[in-house]
Amino acid sequence: MRAQGLNLAMAVGLLVAIVLSLFVGEVALSGEQYRQAFQDLASAPGEILWQVRAPRALAAALTGGALGLAGAILQGLLRNPLADPGVLGVSATAAFMAALVIVSGLALVPGAVETAAWIGALACGGGLALFTARVREPEALILFGVAMSSFFGAATALVFNLSPSPIATAEVLAWLMGSVEARSWLDSLWAAPALFLALFLAMRAAPGLKMLTLGEVAAEASGLRMGRLKMAAILGASLATGAAVALAGVIGFVGLAAPHLVRRLAREDPARLLIPSSLAGALILVAADVLARLVPTDQELKLGVFTALIGAPLFALIAWRAARSWRT
Image (cartoon, rainbow, N blue to C red; front, side):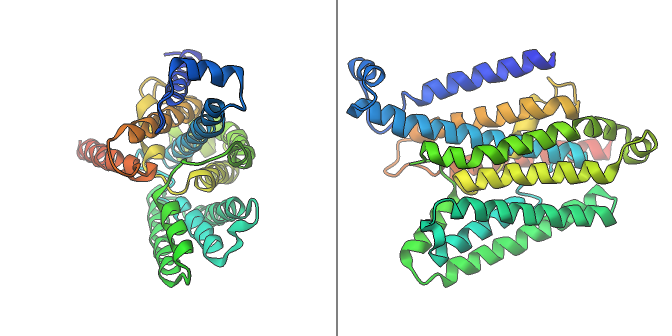
């Protein structure tokens, strides 16, 4: 499928999911109330539609788009279908910084949590970039990322354990479970610039990611500057992940699943995979948010929990297929 057609198909699917999300919520609106919501934005139905459901759908789309983009970048850079922002520790580092800000009481400062998440993600990205400058093997980078993820996951648990306030503890727990509930237009506005910068860096890295399919040695012989490519790719993935964590907390497996959803349609081209993966990630998360709201439970399922329940079996399936291909 051509890139334009694939992007259009993903965009249409995303638009349908967003429209559907406007009709799903705790409060059922009648046809007359929807008409009132469109005619009078300040009415009660208008507040529900435009100040609760629409910002939530946008937050889910931006978060999923950021994670899908980050996953496609890392899978292309490492040439590994199991690469994911969560596996490489970027999500864990961003979550640790956000948790630290929440427990310290600085979360009341506008933008403090978001900025902390970006700093954590970029710090992890910088560490990964320095590591790749010294070690060429992609497998070693994955192992280093797993170590980072384990360490900062434990550090976040320590912050959670030592929190002096039950309220702060509950806020950190909610953050770690991941959710786009009660997000506002301003929350998405905070995350959007980082996502667009990540997209810019991804587009700069796209030609290099395509050359990498020839192998690192052949790509360098063809004139590819690996240092610049790795820096742009890792910083782009880190910014996108930081934006996602800042907006919705820790949500796993979307960055892993989204590229696989469109990989064959993009003809296995890492450069052509970037935009469709971002759109697929947005579609997955908006749809998951709608489904999580439809599950008949006393309390609404957290989005991160819902994606983990679906994503963990998918991760096992991808790993099994990868193991079969390695044996052959």
